[in-house]
Image (cartoon, rainbow, N blue to C red; front, side, top):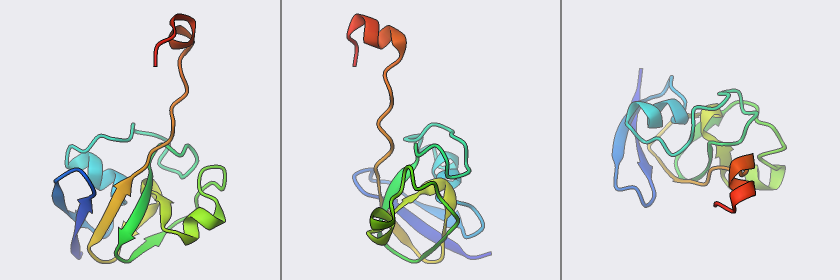
Length: 108
């Protein structure tokens, strides 16, 4: 297995990853918990990132969360992307919906 480095913009942490692990798994294993542990199938959108530099392979992702135009501009879901070189990325995520309690009391 080949190892590469992942660098998350504005996070000051660089870590080694295995090419067989998707970026989200690598983030969690290195205590970067920006995205909740979602579906891992490209269908929930909570792990949206933008690849700034590097080569990667990707699996299918829901067009509900990644449009063709976004994909062409480096946006992907971290649970569906595997590094093929060193990667620099920015975490985007998905805007979370307010809970009923937050809506009722005006939180968030």
